[in-house]
Length: 159
Image 1: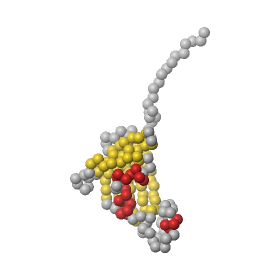
Image 2 (image 1 turned 90 degrees about the vertical axis):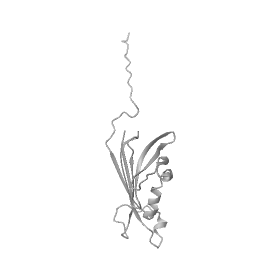
Image 3 (image 1 turned 30 degrees about the horizontal axis):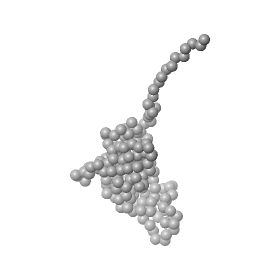
Image 4 (image 1 turned 60 degrees about the vertical axis):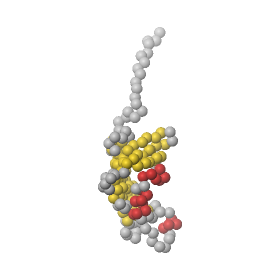
């Protein structure tokens, strides 16, 4: 007869593959809004599920007593049925930038930093090779609309 086959059971966790080093993403957009309008949108943490992809919930956990200290926030990211929460410290420079960094005690990211900067476009023609993301109808209006260069920088590494 045939020799008996040995059964070797191996186990492997779902995410046991080697993780890449920190990854960085940069996106620039020219938008038809003022610094104030976009700053107010991005600094409204509770509205994140309305405009951030994959953000299903967001809330402010604690507000600082000193303006230079960060907010502690909780964001829930994912797809229906697969969600994960993580904590962030959010720093504000009114009408200039919003910076979020993952809190030390989160289980999703080893590191996470996202920076939103709000820079007015002063030249009549953008010097960036990127096209304006405002709709064609908005570009055809004869009065000059406010224009804002919005660089968004994200650096992250997973646990």
